[in-house]
Every structure is written in C-alpha cells, then in structure tokens.
Amino acid sequence: MLLIKNGRVLDPASNKDSLLDILLDGERISRVGANLPVDGAEAFDATGLIVAPGFIDLHCHLREPGQEMSETIETGTRAAAHGGFTAVCCMPNTQPVNDTASVTRGIVERAAAAASVRVWPIGAASKGSKGEALAEIGAMKDAGIVAVSDDGKPIATARLMRQVMEYCSSLNLPVIDHCEDASLFAGGAMREGPQSVRLGLNGIPAQSESICAGRDVEMASLTGARLHIAHMSTRGSLEYVRWAKKQGLRVTCEVTPHHFTLVDEDVRYDSNYKMNPPLASRSDRAALIEGLADGSVDAIATDHAPHHPASKDVEFDRAPFGITGFETALTLGLTELVIEKKLSLMRLVELFTTGPARVLGIERKIAAGEPADLTIFSTDREWTFRAAESPSKSRNTPFDGRSFRGAPMATIVAGRFVYRR
Ligand SMILES: [Zn+2]
Image 1 (cartoon, rainbow, N blue to C red):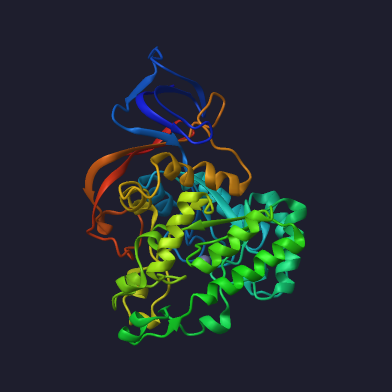
Image 2 (cartoon, rainbow, N blue to C red; image 1 turned 90 degrees about the horizontal axis):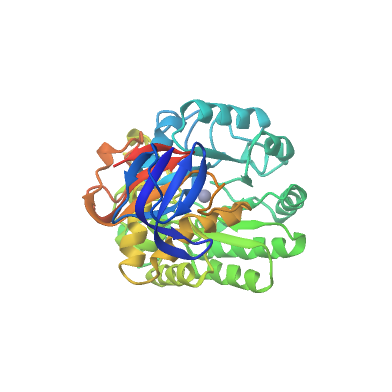
C-alpha cells in the first residue's frame, strides 16, 4: 500500500483539480479522497506537487532488438521513467523489424524482464517496412501490439495504405502514419528555406509531409479506419486533420516537444538539430501551438530517437535523423506552453495522458479500480538537463545544458516507484 498525500490532483478525464490523497493497493488505485488515513501504508508527501495520471508516450524508439549500442529496453525505459512516463509505445524499426509475432513476443518478454515502465509495441504495417506486402498484423495483435506503423518511412502507396487500413479496421487497430513524400524529401537534411540556403544543406519542403497527410486523410475517409498522424510538423497537415475531425473521421495526431519549441532558424551545423520531420518554420510552430491549445492535436509524443554518439558525430547531411526526448518532454511543455500561457496546466496534462490513451482506444483516469500509474511533478523546480547524466545510452539532444523550470519528481507504475528525484 502506498499513500500519495496532499498533492494537487489533476485528472483530465473528470476535469478534477483539487487537493486529494490517493491510496494505491498493489497494482490498482484503491481510494481517492481528502485526508485518507495512513493506516500502515507507505506515505509520499506530495505537498506542492502535481499528481497526474501516468503519462503515455505514443512514439519512441527503444532500438532493441538489434541496435543495443544506441539504446536498450532497459536503458530507454529508465530514461522514460525519469521523464515521468509510465507507458511507452515503441516503433517497429528495430533489427529485425517488428513485423512478426515472434519479434513482438521477444519485445514483450524483454520488457517484462528489464523495463522500468510499461512497453506497448507497435507492429510494422508491411513486411520489413518495405512497403510491399502486409506484415503479420493479426498475429502481432495477439502477441501484444497496440498499433501499426512503418515509422521512419511513409506507407509507400495509397493502394497499400488502403490494404493496411482495411485490415487494421477489422482488428480495430490505429494506423500510425509517418507522412512523407519520398520524391520531395529525397536527399534533404532540414526544412527548405532561408536557413537551409544559409547552411548549404538540401532542403525538404513542408509539402513533403502535408501531401502525404492529405492523401491518408482521404484514405481514412475511404476506409473508415483509425488514422494517427505521427510527429505532425506543418500547418498544412494540421488543416487536413481539422478537416477530417469536422467530417467525423477517426483521425488523430501528435506533436513533439522539439517541434513546439524550436524552428528551422535554430538549426546549426550540429547533427543534434537534425530530425525527421525537420524543424519547421515559425509559422508552422505557431500553428502547432494553436492546435495543441484548441484540441485539434490529441497528444504530445517524444519521438525519442537515440543514436550512438559515433553515428551522430559526422557531417550534418550524413548523420541519421532523430534526437532523444523522454527527459525534456514535460519540462518543455511547461516552459514553452504553460508558462508562456499558450495552454492551461490541465490541457498539458491531458496531452500526456487521456489524449494519447484515447488514440489507443483506452481510458486513463484517477479513480478507484484504475491501474496505479501516476506521474508526480513540480511546476517550479529549477534544474539543468545534463545529457551525460541520462540513463539513455545516447546523448543526441539539442537541449543539453539547458536550464528549465518544472520537473518530474516521481513516477509510479503498477503501484511501485520506478523513479524518484
Ligand atoms: Zn517517423
């Protein structure tokens, strides 16, 4: 038994914001109320802290199996726990690709043995994510996948997208879409614009993403499938999502902390600023923040993409895309969105909890009987992020050395502390 005392409980599902105690009994929440008796339970004093439902990250790369130099399920989920996440969805672009039930089972078993937080695998849409034949989606669902994606690449053709969507519809699985038009993207390293010209890097136009988002919103309209746009970075894509929601289509989307924090003008000749989709224009960033505030965006997801230092420590155009993200996600949300008065603290919590849960078709709330997953954080704790101290095996972040206000203080999964600051 664990009693969380005197915290300010924020529960977006019930819109509750009040000083309450929460009693956890094993893996479940047993009581929520004012002044609950300690009665022999272990007590945690949350005075001055926010107590939220456990954060869910819809998008990360744990690199296991196959790229354990960069990250493992053990190290990645430890970093996730430090960031306040209680569950993470890992993308299938491992080696081998998670495109069969046996790879999925391997991930689930490894997570049961070594993970700090819940690991919910995402299965590939096509075999090897090659964009040709369908992966073993039904068998992977039985083995534990929560969604399907060829993340890292777009689903090559509308015809294949139709097959994936029709199949996933019958299984009620969301299709997570990495939107990119390969012919426009080709050879690009950052967003096309004055800064790419200044740096002499090949540019990628915003339309590389939005053309594909438009295509797939149309495909969701054709099939009725659940479509989730990953790491959405452009105003154009957001307009397609808004249109789809207005039509009542089952279309959702996520935005990463780096896309609501940084813009293309911030890019320096440093591969820690290289990610896909690339950092966007000021106007795109403003649109994403509007979408986060008005409900058009459903979730904040990290796209935590660790790369071993040796692979990132090369010329910008040769470096792989991606940055780490678990430990800076919440604090970037607090700093860039809440302190800047772009959205309320309740809305920020929703984007990390009930929002992503809804995308997966589950609920997340603080009530008796619910899983004992909680994220406890401070909105005023001052600290400096040091990538060298991260439990992640990788250091590829543009936020190393940056000072923040607000930090995760404790992460609880199934009634146990997996992180305490
Ligand atoms: Zn992606």
